[in-house]
Image (cartoon, rainbow, N blue to C red):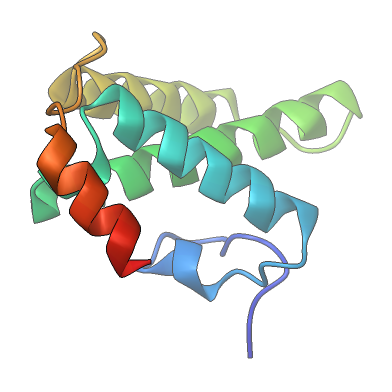
Length: 117
C-alpha cells in the first residue's frame, strides 16, 4: 500500500513508496527531478549520490514540518531542528551547490531514441 506522506523516520526508497496521486508525492518527485537535473541528470549520478539526494529531500521535508509546528505553537525542539539543518547543509555540500550541465546528446542518438518511442 502506498503512503500518503513521507515516513516519520528515513527509510531507503521512501520516495517510491509515496502515493503518486497525492500532492506531496508529486512535489517531492518534482524536487527529486530538479535536484538530480542540477547535478547533471539522474543517469550520471552514482548510487551514493542518488541516496544522498533522497536523504536531503527527506530532511528538507522534515524541517518544513518542524517549522510548521513552530508556527502553529505546537511542540518544537530547536536542538533537533538545528541538527537536521546542519545535516541537510552537509548533504547538499557533498552533492555540490553548483549546477552541472548534462552530457550533450548527439543528433544520431536523439533520433534513434525518438524512433524507438
